[in-house]
Length: 260
Image (cartoon, rainbow, N blue to C red):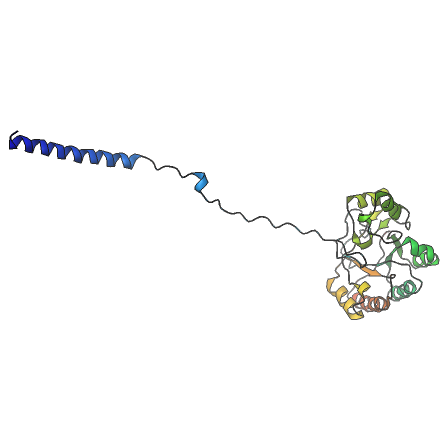
């Protein structure tokens, strides 16, 4: 082979290599990239929703937390119609021959009325007090017969405590412990469940001024205030009621009984 021919062949081969490279490069730019596998993608983390906390009933042996009252069939509606500044005092666990008359005296001093949620066993032991409460313009609600936690009772016992307790249109479950079965029995007995808005913890005897401060801080128009005329020494309750009514009356509040 002559040198001239060899040079021509070499030049052609080089040109072919260059053209091949250019074609390969062009193909690489027009081919789409390979999709990333979903298994290799780290998913974004979405924060889970914080669950809503449901108020829990008070622990047995002491009264209950500030559980909102049930609005259906509200026995405060008529007395609180319009924009009246009204508060509803209520007293549990009586009637008591020592403390109930003292509370009635304080209420009368300020032209106030209240609703007394009574226990059947206390009513039976002190029958004359029911008439005394009603004669003073107050109302009476049922607080069961023996103050059990109704949600923990068998159906027969639960119904006995609800149906055979003090006669009323209103029922306050002990400890505020309620559930659909309790509410259904209350309704079947012809009553409406009534809880409260403010618990100044007078049952714990924290001191007269502590009870007053709690009422004055937390009570607002149309609130139901939970206090006690039974279940132990209520000296602080009586004294705190006197102070609170004086202060609240000066602010323009009135104190009707609930329609029970």
